[in-house]
Amino acid sequence: MAKGYWIARVDVRDPERYKDYVAAAKPAFEKYGANFLARGGEYQRLEGNVRARNVVIEFPSLQAAVDCYNSPEYQIAAAIRQEVADAEMVVVEGV
Image (cartoon, rainbow, N blue to C red; front, side):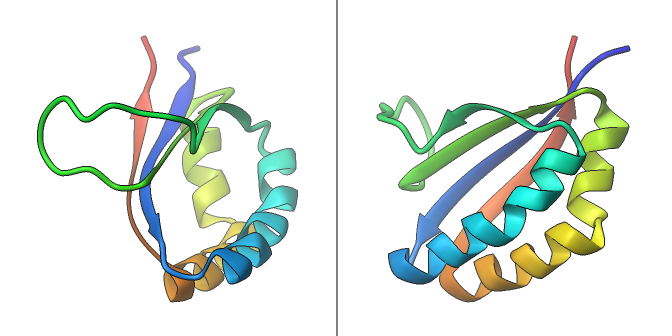
């Protein structure tokens, strides 16, 4: 079964409140087997627009990645993130 990946590009407007998002999201990530591959590290712009924070999260399957996002646990965290950051997020299937 192919793995699923969240790819998120984020500009954090309120770093202190963003910590609340990270804490609130943790139970969903643990429940759905999230494995962080990239989490806000150094980056270099190659093409197009960029955001300050880039995150890649691996899940056991595409369905687990989608289920995590749609879970009640994550939706609580998402509401916090949407108040304190601007983001684009996609879920992609691995090869």
